Image (cartoon, rainbow, N blue to C red; front, side, top):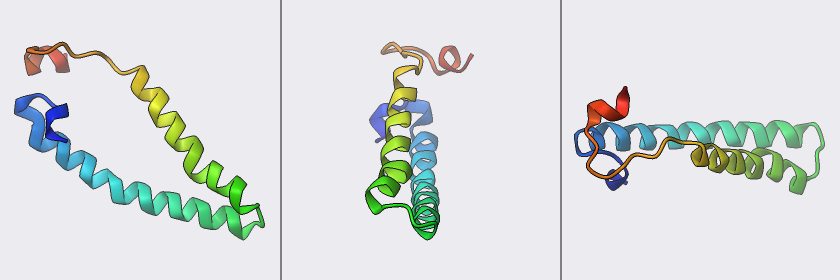
Length: 78
């Protein structure tokens, strides 16, 4: 995962991604549970709690800024 970040930010980037994983798992499970509690079909609940958020995250990545190889960290942030 560290290869996705500039050299000076690898530890911070990977730590952030790893910290967000469990939070997403808890939030997704809570959303799925609440959808099932109101008697929504399991297939529809799975699409709403997992499929749509995953699709949205991929679409957000398409809109992310391109970082050219060799770019300085200061140039990326600002």
